[in-house]
Image (cartoon, rainbow, N blue to C red):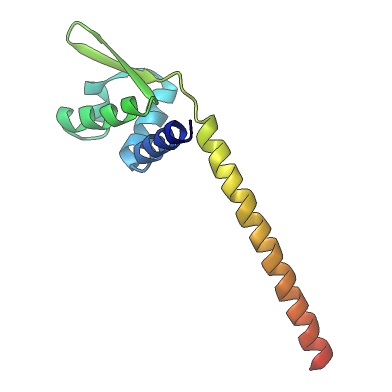
Length: 116
């Protein structure tokens, strides 16, 4: 289970690490689009866009369907809840560390005022 979860996170974050792929997801959030339409919108070659869509598809973020000569892309069924939960857990750790640091800084300031 841990390996599956980790592989899924790796695939998601790898897919989301590219600005073009994030843009494709935003575009598909508005409406389905063909790979050709996406390539035109992002000023890329059809081959380049196919590669980006393939990465998103492997991560489960996009699905494609071929009808005739047109491959239509839409958002996948998978949401990003697991990724958001992972980020939230890390944020809680960092928030706790920054709060502890703030307390130390305030304590040092208080000592400096009283000693100084």
